[in-house]
Length: 247
Image (cartoon, rainbow, N blue to C red; front, side):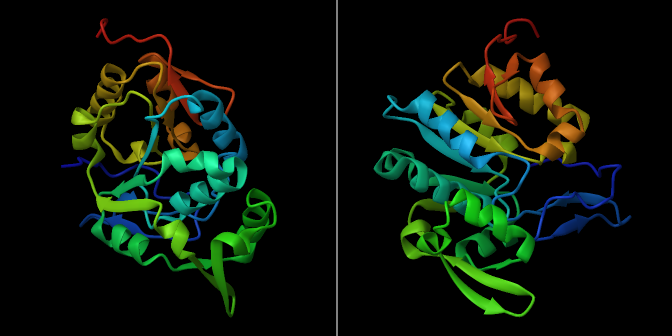
């Protein structure tokens, strides 16, 4: 079971249109499910181009997204993959998306989201003006209500899952693993154990995608200590100098 410790920073992260905060009996934040469409702590175009360049000739490449919250990032990625790669994106489907919180997964399976006006520029930019190709949109006062179209929903499989358990048995060869913005909620020992297991199971065919909130808490430094290197795409890491035999 995921062991999570209250973070000392109780301020709301700057990302997120969907807000869901889980607190303990002392009102400390245990974890959040905050997210949004096309969250701006990553360049989705550069990310998809990176994936395409690395895995274009790999038939068994697979995308796994843990800590997927209500699914908005999954559908953002799906839209950009299809928009940029066309039929070449099909090899990555279905995306496997998991979250420890059953409520998040129930929302993801429903797939109906509020979209605020501040999300619209990124939504238009990353879909190259073709947002309506991927999402239905209904006006609803301050927010628009958007829903992924059925063909998009068919390209993802949502389920509950604990990444600290899954990572022990998950083969990481030719895997693109999204594990974004959840490491600050792990206690120190679990964060160390998680990254150690990642390094033991990964190789140079693995890609790890983290988030800006992870970097605020120096979790990128922990990754680098275990041999994960930054790439030219922000928040994207590869295992280049494995320390798996040194710890």
